[in-house]
Figure 1 (cartoon, rainbow, N blue to C red):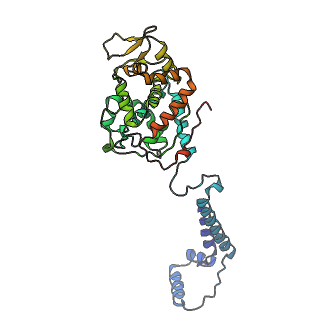
Figure 2 (cartoon, rainbow, N blue to C red; figure 1 turned 30 degrees about the vertical axis):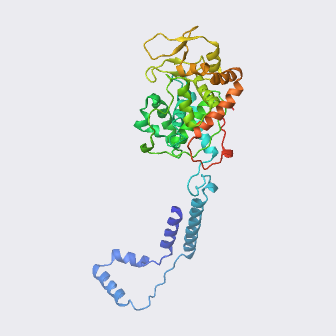
Figure 3 (tube, one colour; figure 1 turned 60 degrees about the horizontal axis):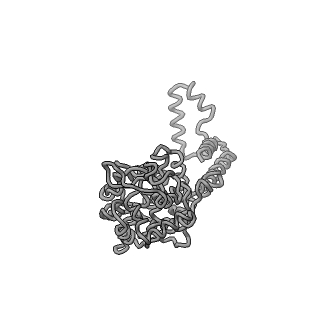
Length: 375
């Protein structure tokens, strides 16, 4: 565009009539001053007389410059409207509407970070990402339709400081660079998507997903006490999960998340992993509950159980409640005997948990299943 303009300008300068002939330019430098003044006066006085001199222009240059200008303008207009014709990215039309492929890119970015940042706990941020998604969702109250994953209100001190959420800042900080990389996704959707990613990347079942959660301000923070208290018994489990609308089978299935991760004394006060493979999802949690002998741990911390054989594993009072209660135990036995059944029913239950209280625009039959790094 700029070169076309310069060509046009040069053509105009060439085409314009010259006001000086070679003879007058020579006279200016060799004639006396008086002669120059007289020559100027004669020229001024004869301004209404037709000049005897003829000035030749350059019509070819003028045509060339005009043509170049038009071609340049057309080319620039085409480039701005159809950049893909010039090997550039196509111009976006209207507001950005993310699709499945865009969310898959977010999933892939989380999975990549999980693989590269292996310095956390037992070698993976996966368990704490799942805990973040679980605790963000587990505040839902079906009676008031408050809480749940819609809002990401744990970002704010009233909820982020709840005792049950201790240590989850590590998960939120882990995801912050992902949020900066994909600013269009809400924190609410990102937290749940990362939970889905964590489960699948730790070799758990596929978890269908759909977006639609919106971030909210601190006025939507939920009161403390909506998440499970590990020191309680089966009646507490039913009260907490029943408030969200879950039945006994779903409660036991969701408890299977304890196959992953560990407790920390500087967070919950408890200490140790539930299984020997805390970064791989299996039905070992249920097997260990039934097959190992558990005794109260002798220490200065809160009451918890340890396995008698190795004293390296732990169980919480709410964990042992699952095999003490007749109804709960039935499902513990089912899952201990069949990992596929556990995976199927865990996937169904956690899908419900992650969607509680969310006003989705996307229909249930339009949920997406992301490809994991194992696919």
